[in-house]
Image 1 (cartoon, one colour):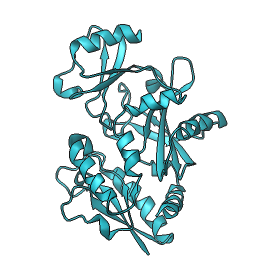
Image 2: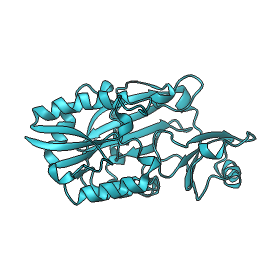
Image 3: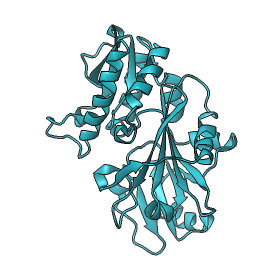
Image 4: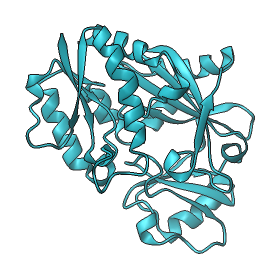
Length: 293
């Protein structure tokens, strides 16, 4: 039996008084992954990524799992993963982490032909930058996101003429700005899940009425989506743009104004895997993990 650490965060444990609102997503995910891994001869052991007693050398591998506090301490997270990568098989690999941790990876994917949403990049989300973005993007309704972040953290929707959000609700430093696409409210986002580069399942993520954020902590919900051959091919084309070993990958796509799906994010670090929308995903994950350790 091999032993693999599943890296999570203290805020994802339900007994923690500071647990996130969506802590239960860790429970759903590990409940799907651990039994399937055990059947494949792998003991998946949850460990907190910044636990000072964590010794990665004791494990045959370490999976970057629900580490959903890393955006508040990115430097510590990066240092911890670099250290683990020197002691065991980190998945996804440290090279993938270095590339994917900053959303500037989207520039690389655009250069490789991935279908993209128009995006502006800026050093800060100040008033002048935001005002200029309306004109540059040709949109009176924009989304501002931090270059390092996840789960809609410090992300804001801003309409021309509105008072800007408070500073603590905007990106701390570098940011990316995109036009707001009505499809996120009308149709939702699509999350295509891959394990070992093979397609597993797709979830349609729909925000709560009156919101645009699809995460469950904001009232979003998910349902099974059976993608068309064309939709699967678009998601696969994004995966094919990436070199190296991939244990998991989540391709998040949204329909643009031209009616075609475009890439929002390629999640290669700590994506939620939507186990409820993929009943067989545990076995797919286990097969991919076994092939890599």
